Amino acid sequence: MRAESAVISLKSPKPYQAIFMGGLIVGVLDISSAFILSALRGGTPVRVLQGIASGLIGADAFNEGLLAATLGLALHFLVAVVATTVFYLLSRKLTFMIDQPLVSGPLFGIAVCLFMYIVVLPLTFHRSYFTSFSTVITPVLVHIFCVGLPMALVIRHYSK
Image (cartoon, rainbow, N blue to C red):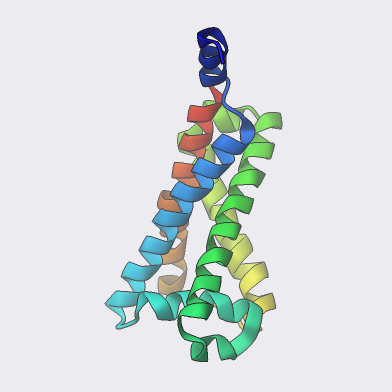
């Protein structure tokens, strides 16, 4: 590879780079917040990850140890990458998402939170997760600061 082509490839990041880095950063921040919030209630990271896996394989996930926890971690990062992909694709059509990441990121984070808590979790676990204001505010804040905002900033970075 010539030096000239290396410079060109550095100046034009590919979409998969933006999506991978966004998904990775968002996935790490979001799961870290889940671990911390769970620990404050006496939970463990393995139990959090088994809970994620239980959305796919049911209550048996809590009896499957690290295997289910690994599946839960993979599912979590899959969701992070899918959400980042959606943001990336939308930002190609709605350029304000790139131009205004401090606005679009938090709004997208709220949209992801609502989608997860109003559509995905009730379909997966057959129950509502929003029962009071206190159960709403923490996930919304996590999705603003650990999902939407970092996602928008990463996508903006790779869109220059």
